[in-house]
Image (tube, rainbow, N blue to C red; front, side, top):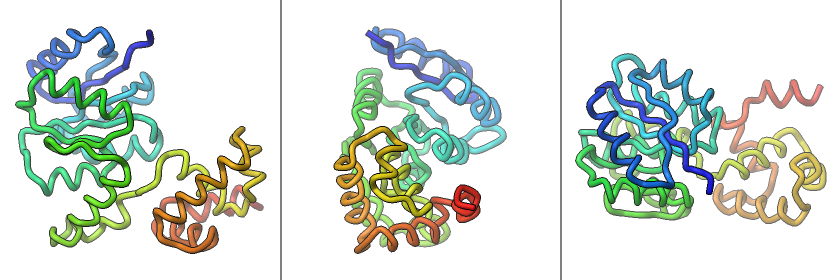
Amino acid sequence: MSLHRIIIVDDHPVFRQGLRDVLETDSRLEVVGEAATGEMALQLIPDYEPDTVLMDVNLPDIMGLQVTRRIKARMPEIKFIVITGYDDIEQAFHAIRAGASAYCPKDVTPETLIGIIMDVHDGYYVVGERKMTHDEVVKWVEEKVGRISGPLAADAEDSFIPLSPREMEILEHVTHGKSNKEIAYELGISHQTVKNHMTAILRKLSVDDRTQAAVYALSRGWVRLEKSRRDNP
């Protein structure tokens, strides 16, 4: 059985060791690396390609949520679990927007933490005691946008991407003007699978057609126009 690879990012060595000790009690989990700063994490994570990163919020150089956002933009398949001593709903909201799959306090029990890791691995989102599907977390974020004011909410729509990594990949090809058939060929999947993903994309973005979906993605910076032009001379 392949092990679930984990990197721990926290500036307190005693806390990192405590997490390692907890995780190593489960035979399914393997800690493959540790980082004490954001810069170290930005170098370590791409090198080790873990399944999950346990990320502290307050790091001495780059904040944990900034690291999360940067890595998720490059490696969307990696799951992030934010573990923090500041357990409040606004920060949880911010963490999910940054790309985290879970948010929990540092006093979480070992059993609960391992359960969260496995839930996230299965595609769920966890905030506190609430476990959500992808669609449920999108609704949760939308609800919080209306309740949280100030700069935290100002860029919420642009920051949170409600699509899966595969859907984003397909949408990027759409912005390049490629047909479903061309996308299926390039990704090595069936034409019907691409159609199914497109249906989900239109539903999640509340748009009527692929052109509107492309404009939506480009206007929010999910796909860079310069890249589209470069790929289609």
